[in-house]
Length: 360
Image 1 (cartoon, rainbow, N blue to C red):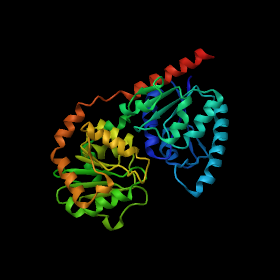
Image 2 (cartoon, rainbow, N blue to C red):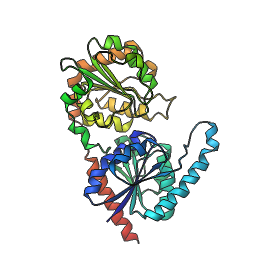
Image 3 (cartoon, helix red, strand yellow):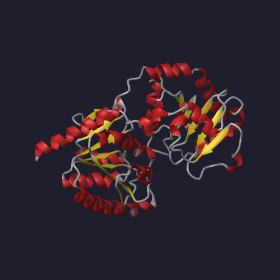
Image 4 (cartoon, rainbow, N blue to C red):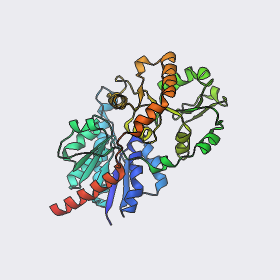
């Protein structure tokens, strides 16, 4: 039996593509193991899939000054030792790395032990964690055509992002009933990301009375970001995080407002949902969400509202515009060339394993 180690963590976007691969990997007969951080979001997301999970030390590599910059390198070194020990014990045929800082010790340990690994880069430009692993990767999977320009030509493959199949099994009626909504009023689904966004949350709540005149609102606001004053507001429901019911909530949504994480927007595209993207500002990130959002805007898939332009007036204008033109957005998305990412990536995994056998 072939053995694979999946790794990735820090945010849900670094985990859900790995989850999307699980059914096909199991179908292909893989013995699957997962390496993540001790107590990151990846542990919680993976635990329900009955896969051996191993936690290692993880330190963040920052591009800006922070006192933790002095201590985190030691966490990375500790993580490298732990990953090396795990890989020696597990002896996998291959590693698939989705990114996030927990993957750095894993891919470095894989290089040291001569284990081939594949990296998946979701954003247009590679993040720092993936940049460290790219030089010795067997393949690098890209989400956007633009990304290929930033990767070694002999390793880069345009695969798109693996989409969880369960997202396509949503039921609108179940979603409406779960929220206590009526079928006679359109629904807006607000997704602030797995950690939640105070900026997006405040913006939505700032226009809520006006919004509820014409829409019902489902608000995924992030852990510890519920507004108790708005509980039991007719037409408005808020959740810290949704797992099992997400497909139903997506199915009943007429419009989605989201951050512009690559995996999230690829799922929105796959489901053909008219959407407004509010990317993280350049001051709060390395600018990857801005590039992701602008790519989708150029292709006609999304309406982009940058944080510096976000006001009550501009957000309401965006919502009214996108809802009015929703059929145009849906039609454009219907003509997008979505890739069969899961099959493509699993084929790559099999291909790299065969290549490594011929080198022995």
